[in-house]
Image (cartoon, rainbow, N blue to C red):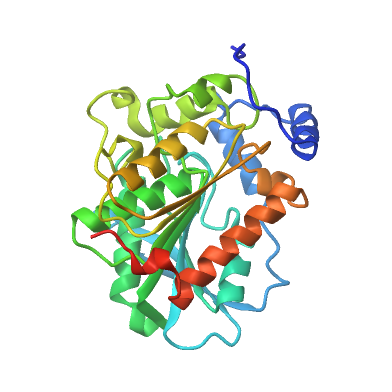
Length: 329
């Protein structure tokens, strides 16, 4: 069903890409399309040959002791005791792998002299909740415990992710708070997937419209949660929008577009952090869609978003920002 609600417009660069994609791929993800979606995303293996980095692949214990893969990217010339960027990939928790979108994150590590880590968390529906978020948390704990031998400053671990990866990053930040786990320097959430209830105005506006529409979101949440989706049995770690108390989180940066499903849940999440006395920086980019900076990287809003995000990272790693000094307790 295509929504008849009024919607914010796309900027021309984004509208052109969506028009092109709508003629090439099925825009809505349905349960029967998950395998095809996985095969499609797997074809986009990114060329990292142009990056001055060294990569290591390790096997570490995940949730329940099951082995999972962790990749570590070290930019050439990185000093010992470097900050760490722990990246979690997108794909609705049903698609993608630890290298999905990594070429967009590697420049952050190179620019800031940071070590980039990324984990192969297991995917739904084969591995439903809590496996994906618990795999990510297990990797965070492992990185923190082995920071010294990895050349990482354990006091400067920043978690980040886009879409589902952003939701997972928020989930492990809540876990670290509640379990008294690793200290997280900050969380950079790029249009994070936070709310399984799919009832916000922006969710309803983009039902059958655009990239990653409401039906796609329902498909992904159903794969993760099954019959629990939308009930009171969903944990705050699986769906961080369920959290009613967000004090004690690290400084938070959120990017989202005005014309996408996740807009309202992202705004609400930042608002709840502020209400609970925490630190959050929220950017709602006008005319963008889900993944706008990947779809139209030369657009004005994509370039502005990249500069703004990079500035926040610099402040976090340099220790000069008000956001870092005012961590909520």
